[in-house]
Image (cartoon, rainbow, N blue to C red; front, side):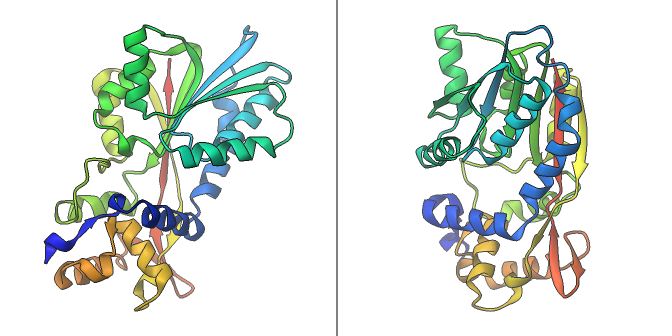
Length: 292
């Protein structure tokens, strides 16, 4: 029975739709916005000191919504300064959306955009091969380290590209989130996928410690309304279950005992809180700020 379960990443369209449902059901982007408003200005306060241009590298920039929030904060901090913003993103679909967003956004005149359709590993290999090392004032990796094979090597490489006073921002799920508990308890019983690995801020801070890299870590609470997951036949719930378990059609392909265990656990206090009749999964995020 378990053999009929397959990774959500094996069905691109279903993955994209389940991710869209996740964003609609969670406070993920609001949580990031809160960080950008309250914490980011202090973090980027010195990245452009005595510089005529600020160089920003976005690794896994997606469709650009968060990237443009970051750029807006940099513009506020350094009015009128030229910004060179390069984006590494493997999905042509996401790059097209990013370009559309840039085209309809005002006040981007002093920003030069460039997109590279490649993974972070492909970018890294290309830079090393061609010896095109350049320093960056701000590098950010938002919710993308799950898709990297060798995370310590990736951290070490991008840290080496930081200029004087530069910072690197990494956002990923927190070690105190429901994801951490879910992956640790059930990861071995869910479809494994070469594309993606289970990693939280707890794992990442251990890696940074081993590498001797200085950082600060901030946790912000985010939730995901998974109430629909407990309504039989609810399409939104089924897509959210797929996203939670990273399994394509989890409800119809998972062994009954596994499904029953997970559905029971998702309602427990270590995974979710119940509020006003809703089940809110702990989607807390960690914002890790790495020093040059």
